[in-house]
Amino acid sequence: MLPASRPTLYFIGVTTGASSIMKVFPKWAEALGLADTAICGVDIAPHAPAEEYRRVVEFIRGDRLSLGALVTTHKIDLFSACRDMFGYIDPFAETLGEVSCLSKKDGLLCAHAKDPISSGLALESFVPPNFWRDHGGEAALLGAGGSSLAMSLYFAQEQWGDNVPRKITICNRSTPRLESARKHLEHVARRIPMEYTHCPEPADNDAVIAALPPYSLVVNATGLGKDAPGSPTTDNVRYPQNSLVWEINYRGDLIFKEQALAKARGSGLHVEDGWTYFLHGWTQVISEVFGIPIEGELLGKLGEIAKGAAQ
Image (cartoon, rainbow, N blue to C red; front, side, top):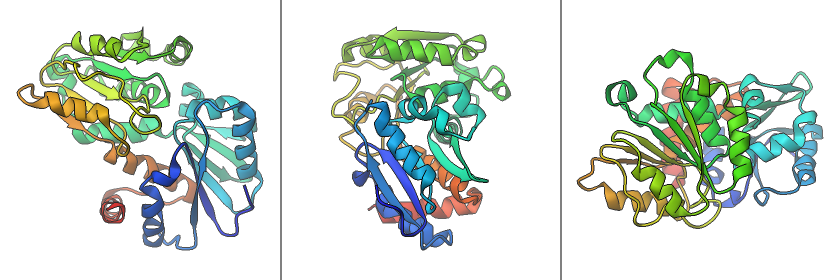
């Protein structure tokens, strides 16, 4: 990594060059009065050695024109590897043990977990009001990474009262990540029953989904379809009636989404992709790094810009 020659925002991911943000950000920067600001992708293999994460974070911390970063895929691993390098850790990051945003303030490198906010805003865009209170459904979150933890934390907020899933089940291919999720979400379990299910094969996820009651939510938070090929479910997956299916990716082969759409006819399914999540995820980070409130008409304007730039 070379010293930045102008103000730079980094995107720490796996296949950053394929993301629409590379086309969208320059247009957003112009609209936000940040026309001299660059975006730079940093590709790291999933679950990389700690020293690789530390090298990137140390560079951003020490480089004057490197202003911050959005972190995807590596949220938990980067936080675990670099926790001692942060001068400030926000409450969500502390609770979840993950970081999705790096910023600088008063000479400190700051770690933020924005996903409880951005995933919540995305959920509110397609989950009907009083959906949980009216129907008593459950949530199945496929993958035990940062996105699933953030959604669980979002649901557990006191402000929702009893309008929350009757139960949340987190499924994952490996047991260590499940145990880590259980540890970080102990307080959530005091509000919502939590279940942690080892699902090493897609057919295991199929079984969890088939056992859900009607009006449930199923989320692909595994990264499969974007960061790695494939889907966490099989073509034989059977969804409960009138449920919500959320593919949090907006790019990639999106096999999970196509499998759900194939089952939607006659079952009352609503299938959502990750575009709105993408918008909120990036605008929350940009707002934090550059100190620009992004909401209301400005958020709508950036959404329209993104649609046009991504085509």
